[in-house]
Length: 322
Image (cartoon, rainbow, N blue to C red):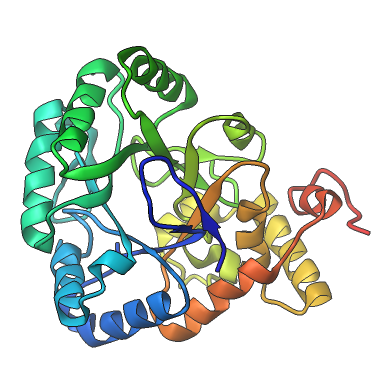
């Protein structure tokens, strides 16, 4: 495993973070086995949230594993606040946006209760609302950090203008400031996001993070399995995945990942995750493994090194990687 040093967090921050968005009780045995294997292999970052899981019970499953294993202090536990309202059809509703200081506090106490934790290592916003000033949001984060309820704080799905505004505000106020930004970044380009208010960055936009005092934690780094080549043009792929990822450009990027994977003796998804990690700034990748076999496959990405020419080849800037 490789690790990062993240502002405000004393524990080593593993470059592969385990996501829990798919966790639900009927898979509790597989989930416990997966989390054991992840930590045994050196993983330290587990990310969850109040609304995670098809039944919104991911936090409780993490709590059960923590209680059963006693491994709380071995991990960096990330929880998140201010997720938009989700209706029973699994749709997110921007008309019921929940980005407010008081909802940071409400979700924090809710999640501490349901995980039976005294604190979170990192607490983040799920979304942004540009109509809400950054100041009160950062004030509330810093208040909870000073209370000892969180060690560090960050945001997800914020554009770079809002990130800079928040970072400048924290600097002016003498706050610890944002430690992590979590936007989607992968080899696959997204022009039609599934969820409102989500931000998908490409290899050019992500260069903003160079030289910044903030870590990028990329979600959907494996493009929901598209870069593992599990979704085919056979009519059986969920429509939303087709809408988000099925473009000629992305299939060419996947094809090039397959070619490089064969050259290096790894899987295409390893090349794709390495594309995210091989950067000149601190970056980690969220992985959504559902079993130990997928976990072991994901970890092989850490052994892959990509040259600048190979990176350009993958994102179609050149037709030759040698």
